[in-house]
Structures are given as C-alpha cells and as structure tokens.
Image (cartoon, rainbow, N blue to C red; front, side, top):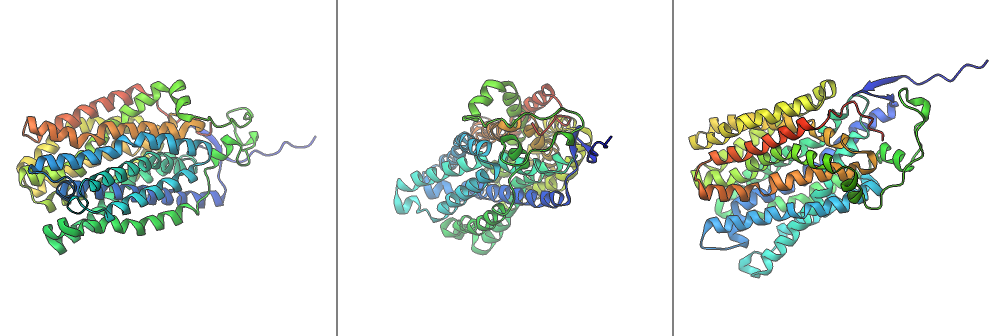
Length: 465
C-alpha cells in the first residue's frame, strides 16, 4: 500500500494551525511591513504637518479675524473636516481593497494624499485670493480625509495577512508606528525651519516647506508599494491565486470554493457585524482622543493660553511619541504570546488614571515635568494601540476585513480624535483649566476599556477566512 503523502510541518501561531511559510515568504513579510510603515508614516506626516500648521499659522493666513481664538477655531474646523470625509474613504478604498486587492487601494490612497498635501503648500492665502483660499483649503483637506479613510486598514492588512505564523500582531503593529513616526518627521522639518526663519518668516512663507517636501516622500512610498506582492489571504479568499491545499491544515476540513467579493462591503458589514463594528469603534476611541489632544491641540493650547514656549511643547510631544514607538513592537510581540485584550485593557485603564495628571502637568509650565508626563501618557497609548491593529483586523472575516477594520478605526479617529481639538477649545472657553482635557480624554478611555472588555479575544481565530 502506498504511503500517504507527508503533511508539511506546521506551527501554531496565535492558536491557528498553518503551513510554515517558505523562505521566500519569510523574506517577503518584512518588506511588506516596511512598505506599510512607509505609507502610514507619509500619510500621518502630512496630517501632522497640517495639524501643527493649524495651531501655528493657518488660522490668520486663511481665516483672518480680529479674534485669535476665532481664527484658530476656524483652522481646527478645517482639521476636523478631513475626519468628516474619512468615512467616504472607508467606503471607496474599502470597496477597492475587498474587491480588487489591498495593494491597489493603498497605492491609490497614497497618491491622493500626496496630491492634496502638496496642493496645500501651493495655495494662495486669504490676503491674495480672498474667499477662494479657504474654499480650496477645505477642498484639499476633504481629499486628505478621503485618503486617510483607506490608508490605515489597508496598511495593517497588507502586513498582517503576510505575517509569519505566530507574529501577526507584531507585523500588524509595524504600520501602527507610522502616526508617531510621521509626527516626529514633521517636527524634524518644522522645528529647524522655525529656528532658521523665525516665527514671522514661518508665518509669512516658510510654512509651505513641510507641505512641499511631502512630494519626495510620496514618490518613495509609491515606488515601494508598487513593488510588493498582493496579500495571499485576499488571493485565496477571492480565488485570485492558488488556494492552499486541504492537507496543509491540521485542524479543519477541506476549504470551500472561494467566495465572491461583496459588491458593497460596507452594506454587508452593517448587516452582519454591526455589534463588532460598534464595539471596535469604541475600543479605539479613547486612544484617538489622547493622540490628537497631545500632538495637535496642546501645541496650540500650551503657548497661546499658558505661555509655554512652542519648542517646549513640540519637544514634549516628540519625546512622548518616541517613547511610544520604542515600546510598540515589544508590546505587539507580547500580544502574540498572551493575547490582545490583556494589554489593551491595561493600556486603556492606565490612560484613564493618567489622563488628568498628564494634562495637569501643563499648569506647571515646567519643560521636564511636561515631557515626562507626555512620555508616560504616550507609552500607555502604545500599550493600548499596539495590539489594536491585529485585534480590529481579526474581528472581521477576510471578505469584509479591509472595510471592517478601516471603518472601526476611522470612526474612532473621527469621533474621538478629529473633533478633540474643537471640543477641547470649547471646554477651555467654559472652564479655563488643562484639567478638562484629562477628564475628557479619560472619559473616552473608560469607554474604550468597556468595549474591549465586551469583545472576545481574537488571537485564537482562523485568520484565513
């Protein structure tokens, strides 16, 4: 009797049994992770540049007013406008990503972001073009928001779906470094520019430099992204590639034929997984508030209201972002070993407790105290958000994963982060104290704790379906 064909060696990765990847697959995964990181870094560099420019110069340049608070509020409204248009990006790029492929959606989103950001750097100001200037600015901001709606989910999926066994959270967390890295990169451009030309020179013309430099970054990002392979999970699910043979799996029967992609993934998502979408959004809402209050709002609030030097606030936020980056991958590796929920719950609970002390440090006007408080706060944020990338992706089936993960994260960013500067500006107009920032962000982190607690652990799930 002939011997049965030997099964390939398998290893457990977060509970799933999968065929060990070939040497070429192992070498491809890091390249894909880097391609995802480059894209999210560029996208968030563009967003961080706009956020910083909103705090420093865009108000009087595009929305002149006799009241500095009104001008700043108008600039933050355009900042929020990009978040309002993000859901459109989820629909557009989620449909492309779930029907045509992750890579195509990511290339398109990066190209749109690059065009919009460089466009902002070329805009005439209100003094030159009148009302046309703010109209064009809002239009480009809406385009940036559409781009962002498709970027995060696609970058995470491209990395997670090609990760080696047992390292999905680690690889999914790589593009999650992009927001903080993008902010550091924007600071590395803005701070020297401010030092070289002074505040007046920056307000007059040099604010355009960080926007125009985005063109170089986008070209590099597009080159990298067009050289990576499409996600094998997407190919397998849609029949776009060779399916894994049934004998490669030790814990499930032969796989069914590929399912056709939904014509309207968002509609299918809302019909079949509304609870997970709602709880997934809640899980990420608190961290979004902490991130945008720290790296956007406080850069304006500290100098204008409390008299803290601008460089002190930029340095504190930059050090905090670097501290968060330093622990992101170790936390993700731990999430691959013990699960996603324990770490996210620890980070969310810690953020609830630390929110008030962190923003209370602003009252001291002490650079070291503020920097230390921000460092701890953004490390707690990394503890919460590092496993979040894999967690949100694992909540949804492969056919709806791009749309599902993107929708949950983008809705959280919009509700918790996009409107945070506006809410904070209003709160401080009613109660002139940085403590209100802590109560606001801490309350949203409490919501995140409850949502994570209500969701199941996802590490053990089958990621191939």
